[in-house]
Image 1: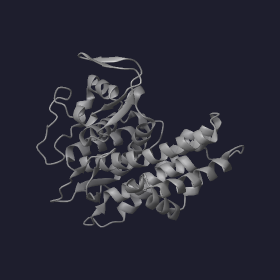
Image 2: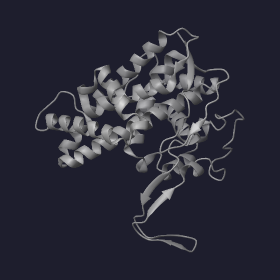
Image 3: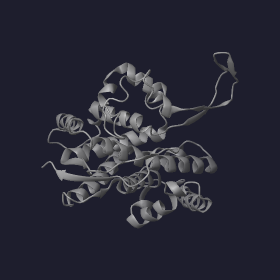
Image 4: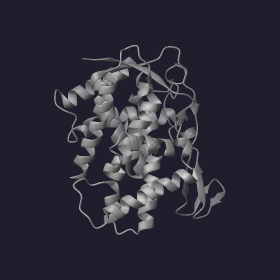
Length: 319
């Protein structure tokens, strides 16, 4: 089925990245942001658009045109639109062995414009959110050997000597906690917007139905009234990272109400969680991850939070 095919693709791409990192000497600095963007681009483009993006050169071309700085470029969007139109036309009325995201839209009785818009939005948003989530999760893991070892122990307990597989991946509860805490600590999406479904009221202020409401998620995600000890560790930039806070179901419920998990979770973030879980399972199983000494990572708050400069790490083999 499509789920197992998608999982196999993610596993393959994760193992390709692992092999690349295993080939590096331990002293080599790895450009994490660059590698995570490339990995996310490959994952998203192949799952949405299929074999069109199996070739690395196609992915590199897509990355140059549709990286975060080019997101709203008219020429880049037009090129992407033309690519998607071609793929939609090819997939309509035909059966393929590989089921991709566009096939689900085609089967949903949507018109061509709806298919185009939905696939474009999902592709762009998923690439950026997945790349940034993977980047921040690995950044935070490099700051704590204890957290990294706890994640390794869970991966080893769940999979043992066997392969990473879709049947057991849901058992990685601590990995999910690491990802949720990465979203919270990095303030991954600092602002969101939503139309008010019903008339609301804050104190004496009436919010009419269909009012566009902006949510300052970056503030709420580190509000000490919502999160116990939000500044738990006095380590520059990485000072807030504590996955154990998500062991409490009430904390997970708060996270769900903010739209970062559960039924309110956006499809792009749900996809990013899945990709990041597979990637971390593959990498942490075989590698120790380290931050580069003296590196200071400054954050840049946009629609999705990123680092201002490249984030560098080093790796060494566990076995």
